[in-house]
Length: 364
Ligand code: GAL
Image 1 (cartoon, rainbow, N blue to C red):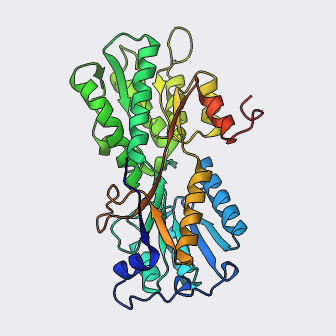
Image 2: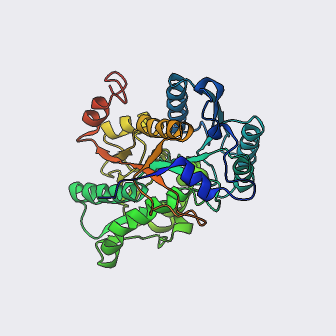
């Protein structure tokens, strides 16, 4: 169990402030400021993935319900656009910034400006790297996500009855997203021993993070790589399992597999993992195509973030439950970690309906 601990916003701001003054001068400094006087800037990476649309919606709804104004921006997965959006939030004196970055290292300049204006910055889901301008981080246990994916892959392979050694291929997420490394490392903690003892074979020979990474989490890139791997290494055998770190990629991978004859006749689709419980992938799981996903309740992440914002602005104790796992290259960022849940055909309806994440109608 991680030790529960709490730090005060004032302490952290005083410890991390540098250059100008150690006293906050922005909205965070003005204890008399009412929520209605404060605009929270929310920078989201893209609308191409269902999860980020939900994240943005939930954060906006919850902040507005708490009385704040919200400046919600999406950056189309384009780094210069996100930089401009952040600079604009600083210029407009938004009171707090919530940032889900595209590239975790690319926002240093804009974040330094926020810090100089004593605007607190929260990294949302993805860690902001190489900067001392980030105060807090809210996310899910990303290492655990990777472990759950690998455990589910092994479980699916066992259940598939495929003879050992199992032929598996590995995919990772975007190399500029800190989470991608955590997911991959978590998964490899579980898979490496099976590779070492010969239970799993990677016929492509592609096992290092850089080679298997997928820039910008782009499904088309994953589809292409799966096609290439099938051509290169599977002309005389079948692939039995694919480690995929995110539902969008899983759908691209499954499309490549179907294009090569898997899923018809006697050629079974391999066990394919995923993440985010996106509706299309949940339907694919129910249809017996994608094997599993990892459910991360984005409403809870939004809630944790809104609570953190209130604690910062009201100068209350800011609750975090992890101060060691997320070193951003400059500092260990105090983090509120939430728990991910593995889902597959056996529990997907149960978990998602119970959580009211989807309606029964949506899952028909
Ligand atoms: C990660 C996030 C995952 C997935 C992925 C692609 O940063 O933690 O849940 O959404 O991005 O969008």
